[in-house]
Amino acid sequence: MSAGPDNGVIETSVPGRLDRLRWGRFHTLIVLALGITWVLDGLEVTLAGSVAGALKESPVLQLSNAEVGLASSFYLAGAVLGAVLFGWLTDRLGRKRLFVITLGVYLVATAATAFSWNFASFALFRFLTGAGIGGEYTAIASAIQEFIPARYRGHADLVINGSFWIGAGAGAAGSIVLLDPSFLPPDIGWRAAFFIGSLLGLGILVMRRWIPESPRWLMTHGRADEAHEILDQIEDHHRNHGHHVPDSDVPIMRIQTRSHTPLREVWHALFHVHRQRTFVGLALMASQAFFYNAIFFTYALVLTDFYGIEASHVGWYLLPFAAGNFLGPLLLGRLFDTIGRRPMIALTYAVSGLLLALAGALFAAGLLSAGWQTFAWTVIFFFGSAAASSAYLTVSETFPLEVRALAIAFFYAVGTGIGGIGAPFLFGALIDTGSRFSLFGGYLFGAGLMLAAAVVVARYGVDAERKSLETVAEPLSAV
Image (cartoon, rainbow, N blue to C red; front, side, top):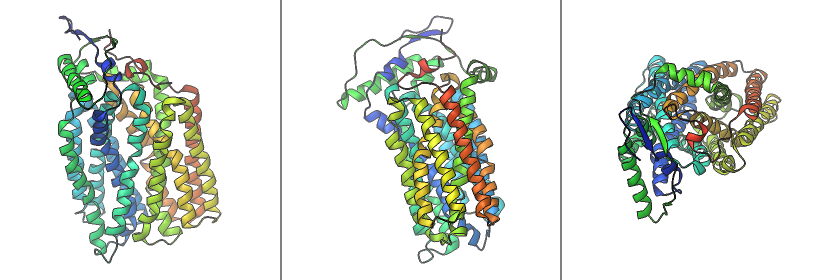
């Protein structure tokens, strides 16, 4: 690296030095400390689904099916607005500062949910919890992408996104205990469940204290010396733990430093320079958001209303479902780096859509028991989880460094807004009709969205496997 001349142009080897590293203990710690965000989201979503029956039976809240679905929509709306606001701040103020702030918002809001006294207060606290999680997504996804070497990026990103289901499993297991009336009174159990996330979050705050700022973000903001100092420490850490750091020359980039990226330049990058990628990102995010949110947020209601499963037993049915969702990205993730992004994304979207249509038809015909219904969802989301994770991977790696966090926020917000916010409320209303065929219509619509997205990515997707972020999308500040 050499410091820049007076015009603010610097020469830097930051991207090359990051990408030449083999996987080491540092990368594992980064994934654990930052990737825990997806675990928290899984925990929150699963708790909301698992306690749906308890919320309906609560003598204080007494929520209807539609209100349970609407509360989930409030959570998603908060996630959308939080992603946009905190995404904008992440690109301006840095990754590190924001992933501390957003975690703080989450901690306070999820604890407050336990003290809800009516539907309005419950919906408000779920909205604020979602805002913290949405902000976490943008700050964390940006930082993780910018630390992970190119050869591991696809697999690592899918596994991190899939870890959502570790949280889902924890939420399901916690609900089994906390919703057991012999252990806690019914109106206390669901309140205690929401404290699980707060306790986890406090531990995460401690873990994140040692994580440095993204060197890639620092280099574009005229702080190249700090970026290379952090890289020196990372490479020393590698050597001290027995990892080899190649001595080969790395590419040098010339960067025009900037304090921030104007919104008009963000708009130009998304809708002019990379408009085809924007179309692909929206198709992937909107379809998976509807696919997931419609089904998962109301799955507990399906079990209780159509299969007569007791609310306190719902967690048992969510555990295998969560396992399938985690194993999909874990086992299929490496193929996204070897076979390639486009064929694997198209395949997982198409298989998910076809299996959903088939399972929906069997459900409508009354041919599935609660156990077989759970098995069907487990198989569907083995592929669906990898598909959804690849959507986040796509929007976080195919746009320039300077707009990465805001791009993630935009796609998360618009995709979730189009495909996710109304879905839980819609499916809650479909369940209230008591008609299996009405619910099948909703499933069929979700399957159609997934199949359409598969066609879009097969035609217009980006072959980003094993390429540096700067090769996939040149920085706006590159000279």
